[in-house]
Amino acid sequence: MKLGILSDVHANEEALCAVLEDARRRGLDELVCLGDCVGYGAAPVECLELLAESCSVVIAGNHDHAACGLISDENFNQAARASLAFTRERLSSNHQSLLRQLPLKVEHDSGLLLVHASPYLSEQFPYIMDAEDAEVVFRSLEFKAAVHGHSHVAVSFRWQDDHAVASLNPRVEVGMPGSYLINVGSVGQPRDRDQRASYAVYDTDTEILHRHRVEYDCELASRRIREAGLPDFLARRLLVGV
Ligand code: ZN
Image (cartoon, rainbow, N blue to C red; front, top):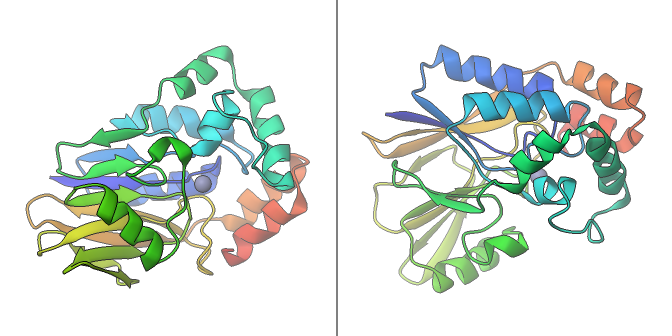
């Protein structure tokens, strides 16, 4: 079975459609989303509806929780707060209740643990930026392989012999010894200086996960952000992937 894993779409309809098309072309059997469907981008409703109909599981991200009022936006920066106000105005009460019902963590049939930020203290949405952060998670919780997003940086961590090692290799052999924490990167707002959309495909037969980058019309997505009156920084960052 081939599972497509998307995360951090952030209301970027152009990036989401390009990834869904890539997934169709590869003949994937199932899609899941690791949260942050909304926030930052110009198309929250379109993305939320597309994800709800294409994914078997949608996990809750911090932007999803803030958009439906489950958490406050006091820790969000100014651009994120402006985009949240924009998002809240557009979501119907049905969209809001859909967001409110999203789970924080799911043990998927594929054997992967699905979460937005971190398998440990998921409800606090901590960032896993380096091997030290990853070590805290591996020491606190037993799991074979977890996939996550949140930092918008496609990287993986392997835990073996009491040691966490980071890798940028897009191919991760989950069946090998050790535990794995794999960030699938962001569909709608990559921050690793590659503006292409990022997502992953996990093959349950070979137990190999592969991250893919997909070209999309980031100029159009950027223009829509500007035309929506959202902060200019949110439009500019898509063109360079920061
Ligand atoms: Zn995010």
